Image (tube, rainbow, N blue to C red):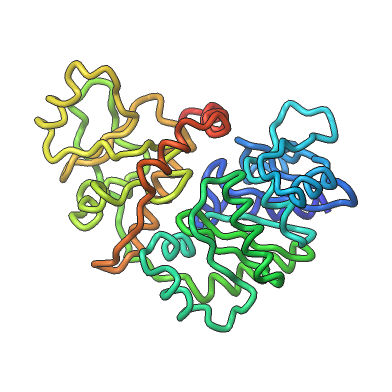
Length: 332
């Protein structure tokens, strides 16, 4: 099972339309052990590194029955890795194999204000799926999912608003088929955006972002207009890119605001110029910025999106579990 799941995870982990950086996770149940991806590891490296951690499944199920969603998983073997933040979510689902994706073509729907109405039209024949309102990953999300499962026991797909999709199955092939069916219904053709060549950065310490297509965030008026109020759309974006976009209308405005500033953002976006980053900008941040761009590309003009609230953002950024995950990133 481990070999098959590792191969599957490496495959999906290399597809930025399904998984970005250290995002997403997977698990399988083997007797009394739940093998789950470790926090901060990358699914893309599943065949190269040992990214899974075994935890005591009976212990988690006992805690769930008692309503203890803050239980700390008991690692069943010596490991320097931490189980995923969402380990309890995997224990809750009865399926032998569970996979959690931040699939762009699904996420593009899950950030919309009318997500329930929009999804009900697209997946009317998928009776095994249910939408779950946004909750902070970890105990809050586990409790919300537990409540959902009590009302609808036969649930194979969880659509997590402003977060991602979780799919359960008996084996990898079943997961793969359910994902394929889902994407066939929800994939939207994104308008092509050719790579742009940014102007040289006149501010010391910044360089053009390495992915030329991302400069459309600065040079496309429709995309740039979303930065002010539709930046914090889902947890991983906030955790790796911050609560607000550092965007500026002109270079003069940018220079004035950054001059003497105590904090220099890793990313700045200057209208009609481009997207610029510091040397501290990581691969995880680059993956998340590309995911954000891809999600915005799939929004028809005028589509209203739901951003995370200030309270929801603060709870993510002040969380030790997410600080640990950020520290595992390497430079881009």
